[in-house]
Length: 196
Image (tube, rainbow, N blue to C red; front, side, top):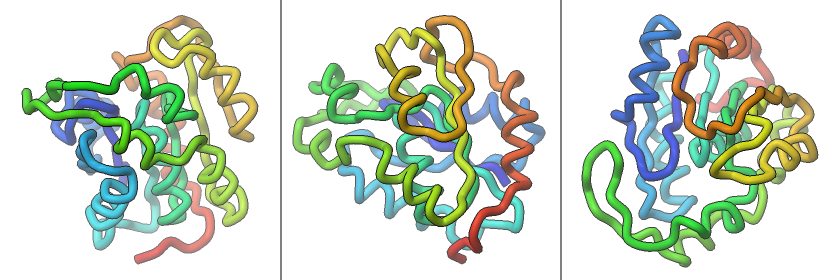
């Protein structure tokens, strides 16, 4: 089972989730979080969405801010994780988005506030280290020159023990097909027993 976590300002119904489902051959559960809510509220909601749906072979896949959440979920739920262009330093990298927003998928308007941004930890490393401690495999795939998260490939090299750097400067994942075999490999890895 693939649990997919969408990026910032999107929804579980995002085109990225649908594309991953088609390219990976189904069995994708798109988790929902609200960009206007605090990190802990969103994390608790996604953990609830996963419980009862987990199998012996799961992987959590996240893109952008969803990558940050995916690593936190991997640490909590002890499931392997593949993240694509993950936010690594949310307070620093997401500050550019503070203000009034319109969800790209639903059209709903909301405020992304400094208080919400401050609810995130400074760096993804706390969750990466927890995954390492409990034996949960995590892979970060990052664009060499991410156009939205400047310097992110360098940060990922410092934080993650398993990193793949891909060429180009794109942030948005337009096609999951180059990553499907890697995702499927991680889907069949199992770290420490998960939380049912």
